[in-house]
Image (tube, rainbow over all chains, first blue to last red):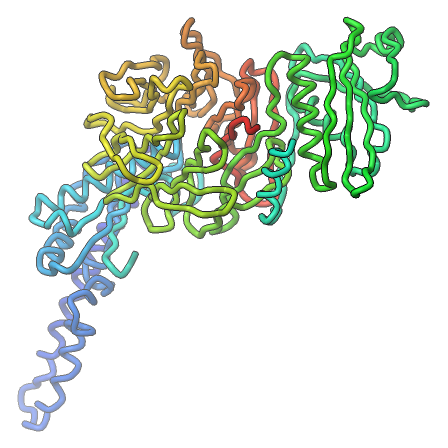
Length: 182
Length: 421
């Protein structure tokens, strides 16, 4: 049953990696506008688009919604009956830790979730253990405790509603929300 | 009776909702055959007092209503009963009565119960009621009959709470024990779980996720007023009332993990009950208030433990199996109902706390949230049939089985309310 879970995690990591790489050409694009042998007038075309491409909206919080930024990734998946943050999610949690440290006004709500099997209240406990795990990693990375709240939604907010292992694997997760998003 | 009328007057402003219907899927081996004669004049009170009483008694699994030929004249509470005639109809008991319209437009119901075997009347009561109190009055009569003939208090006048999910909408509903007169106490677009009745039956504690996290509320049913009991940093869940109604056990993650605390119903007086590095949850007081039973995975798998209600060293209660959760102590304190996992089936188990014998009571496979009737005879639970959440009830001896379902939506998180006077 657990084996079914790995391909999905792998693709999530793969997608994450793609998204980060796509960012680079966009940032470098303005450099290519200077062609050798061009007339001096060409210089006037460069300024406006460059600013918007790197920091849209001018706020650091915009990065949280930028699909090409790792910070837009908010989900950490867990194995059955497991609560440790797997190594493939470490870069994601580290990126959010860096963001929280650089933006002291940012606050994060981590919602832990469990699959549907068993007691609803015990599943609240399992989800809490998962959200506490990401919170602990963030604070170990230097984030102030007051910036992060870890809670549990138990089995109540499944991402996937079928009754099979594929779905359950998608439901054993933490979602990271920033202030303004909850 | 006045108190009964007052209580029902408080319920009237709430709107009726889609009704639960009951299907009986099993019955007790020894059912008392009872002749329930249609009450003289009861056509004024549809669907008829005797019809409701018969349905109540048969639903309990302990009675069998006899089919009767047309009777002329119809015997009433004033008739001298020819016991041998009723014995020849194989009745062990006989219920007769009448309905009269009073000059003020209200109704008067009188009845008498007879023990046909012992050839003796067992008493009767007169009730005055309005037309909208037919069901409530009939349930009172059923309670009388049930108690006289079985020795246990009847639960026909009690109410149940449960949560209905329809699409993205969640409703906390209150209904009569048979699913009739359902009313919505709270509607939300976020989940509601773990309703718990206050011992006086006037309030419900529950967990609502309306703030994107679990928060414990207390809701007064008569006026719909609600207040936050526990909204600390982290999760707040699993409320359980102390038997005197003066305190709640709750599970909070404010100090890390899921840990049990005690708190006053107004949200004051918080104190930690126990400390562990495990998940400690689903606290429940024993009826005498001395113990708190709870679920903990401190031993590696979730099992049921108990500890003194003032704290102290926990003792493990369940040993068979690798997943035993949701402890509920019977009203007499002698047995423990809980959910156990058998292979991949989640079923209701009953543990005799003296003999340590365990009995699996259900044959369904996704049971949750067991809840004793206040007389301890039945256990209400949530299960899943054909991919839909339904309520089900099983007698404590496993023989009687009933199913309650609605026409639309998932029903879950049942809680059987206490006796109300």
